[in-house]
Length: 96
Image 1 (spheres, rainbow, N blue to C red):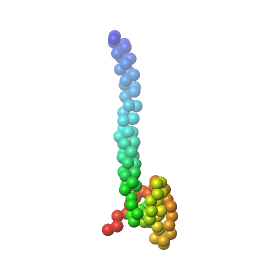
Image 2: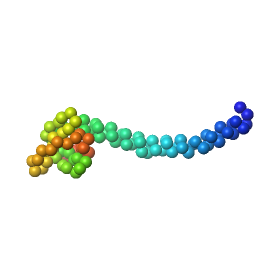
Image 3: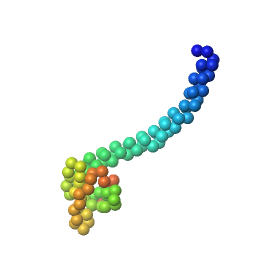
């Protein structure tokens, strides 16, 4: 490889380096933490049992009364029972 080919290769690499660094930063600061959060939510949802007090994405607070394959039946404070998707649950309330 002569000097001009080496310089051309170095120039191409120098132009691509910022894009490579940008992709790495996006992965470590945006994509990876989001995947970890999704895994934690999936684990939390899989461990839910009847009687647990939960908060939904819509802000409803209730206790799980029964569990189906993709849904939960929750009982609200006034006794109303509603069916929600498992994906709608964002948090479990610890009752101490």
